[in-house]
Image 1: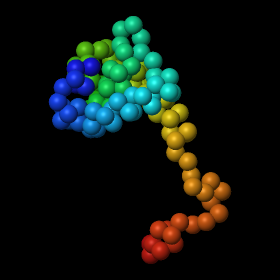
Image 2 (image 1 turned 30 degrees about the vertical axis):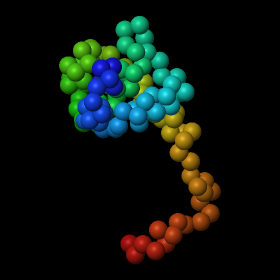
Image 3 (image 1 turned 90 degrees about the vertical axis):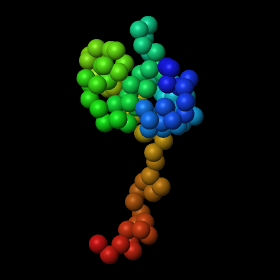
Length: 111
């Protein structure tokens, strides 16, 4: 993807993250089986997903930017949501899954 070869600010403006963070996320997503096809590679899939989220745009804009059909954009966006969900289940853990204690921030809040 040409954005990753260019200026740092270009990557940030498009994906809302620095280039090194994009690469770290890409490495992490590969652990969770991010797979491309013969027509679209996994870097482009991740980039398309982050572009949609980072820019707050819809399918039509992503179709134009990445020159893909609406079905392709939707299919890979949904696939990335599934991968993100699987990643979150492993990485996001409650400190107290039994809820035996109340965090101090909640106890001291007057609301």
